[in-house]
Structure formats: C-alpha cells, structure tokens
Length: 396
Image 1 (spheres, rainbow, N blue to C red):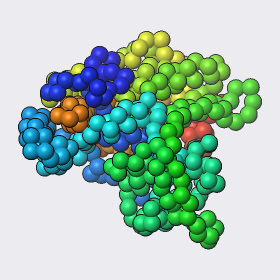
Image 2 (cartoon, rainbow, N blue to C red; image 1 turned 90 degrees about the vertical axis):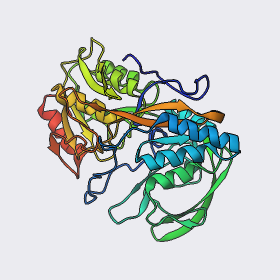
Image 3 (tube, helix red, strand yellow; image 1 turned 180 degrees about the vertical axis):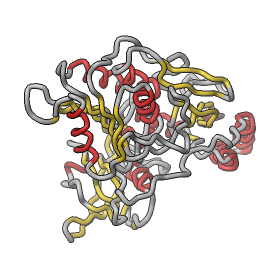
C-alpha cells in the first residue's frame, strides 16, 4: 500500500509538491454522508459517460499554478481561476477546493460532516425522496421519515436538479453555510404538504454496519459499507473475524461512492491471503496494490453492487471478482476508475487533478465501463444475493 496515506489536507502541504494519490474523491464527501442515491430505479439507464475517458489529456499542474498565482496577484479568486483551467481541460473528476471546503472534505473522510442527517434518492417516477434519516440528527428530531418527498429547498423547487446537487445544498456546500446555519425543506407525505426549517449540525456517519440474516445456529452475516472513510477497512476485517465460523458474508457495496483507497485494500485483505488487489498508473508509470496476508479465504462471499458503486468500492469488487473470491450480484457499477493527485495552490486552495487510471487484477479497465456482476439483478437484489449465498453453503 506504499504511497497511500490515510488522510490528506491542505495543512502542511508544499505548493507544487507531488502529493498523496487518491482514487475517486470528487464525490467522497457526499459518500461519507450517505447522501447519494441509494438504489437506482430499475428503469434508469446505467451512466455511460460519467467517468474520465483515458483519452483525456492530464491537466497541466503548472498551468493551474500560474493561473492561481496571477489571480492572487490581481486580488481575484484563486479558486475561480483554477476551476476555469480544470473546466477547459475536460477533466470531469478534477476539482478545486478552497481551504474551508478541503477541511470539510478531510472531516468527511474521517466520518464527520455538517448537515441535517438525510439520505436522498430519485425514484422511478422522478421524485426525490428521503431514503434514510440518521438517528438523532436534526431531520430525525424534526419528525422527517423515510419515504417523505422533498419538493423544495430554501423555497426553490427541486424539480430535476441532480440529487448530488440537492445533497450539497442540504450541507450548505458552496455557500459558506456551517454548523448552526438553517435550511428550509418543503416536504410531502401521503398528500400532505408542509415546510420545516432545520438547523445544520456536526454529525458522524456510520460507515460500516453489520447484521445477521436468517435464523438458526449459523446465519449469514451482512456487512454494509456506506463509504470507505477512515477505519472502514478495519471494521470490515473485524466483522469477518467475528462472524460465526461457518457463516457466509454478504458484502453490500451498493451506493458506496468510494473514499480512501487504503481502506478498500484493508477490506480486500479480510478475504484474501495476500496477492494483487489492483494496478494503477500515474502519468504512465505503473504501480500495484497488494492485500495483506492472513485473510479468511474459506467462507463464502457474495458482493452486492449497483450503479452507485463507485471508485474504491469498484476497486474492491473487481479484486474479489477477478481473484475468484466472491460472487457479485446486482446491476453494473458506475465506472469511476480514475486516479487523482492533490496539489496546494496559493491561499490554501487545493486542486485535485486526474493523473491516471487503475485496473483490476485481471487487467480490466474500470473507468467508463464499470464492473458487470456475475448475476445481473435489478429488483430484489438483496434477496437474490441471500439465495446465492445460501447455495454456496453460507447459511441464511
């Protein structure tokens, strides 16, 4: 796992230095909050053009730094100048953060965020609905429930706005909103409409949850990983070690949009006894990631994926699939396999730029293609996965 740190941020970075690599961090903040769409509608087409094409030229870091330095000298926005360069480059996953945003980004990867405690998804009918309410959160205290429809946000109709944009507004991203700031929601439940003003709070997310499936002396164990925030890999490893000896594992990576690649490698190590997890390139130079030895290679494993499975979660899925360690069930994954490298800019802003792509142990390219499950299921995927696990001798 050389070259990959557990966390990264603007403090202590040297401008122009080559910094720690990260996979798929453009949406990691939303992933850490559990606020991306949970289950794509069965009729929703799989995204085909969301990830960086391998033909996109890498952004010239010096060009961004020059633009940022000029903006600083002119007294204009460094972030705006850098974003203009990234936008022209065609780097879809390139991103620029000001210092406050990047600090929030760091906290999210540590499992902490500012928000109201709502997860949202778009239904097959086009509505944005509450898919989860975090216990003890402002949304929970306000009586908002799973299934409530979100119609307006601060008086503005949600309409066809992307769910990720709605989530960002709930968090106050881009507006400078912080803990204690307010947001007004327009909701609908069983034909009744009302508005509720919530106060944002500092919340922590539960990246890994574990529960038993079925009855009997040896039920299967479901491990749900919402995001690969700091410590998530060790939680997966511990959950596998603590499972009954003859119980199978259902690893649920649906709606997991990534996070820290180190954590995905630790999670892979729970099921592998060493060996290759993925290869990646940085400006043409190939590197490799390896699992630690000593993982559980005997118990049956089924991995659940969908169109919201992205980045580090796809890296883990591809490793277990290629190594013959798990049966994958669900719908095709997103296809986010690009590698970003952060660089500090004047004034504490940070630019994350795409510098390469990763591949599965069998050499498959994930970026723009995703991973096709062994068993394609769009409705009732969890039940089908349980049936498959039972057939493999994993209880349930």
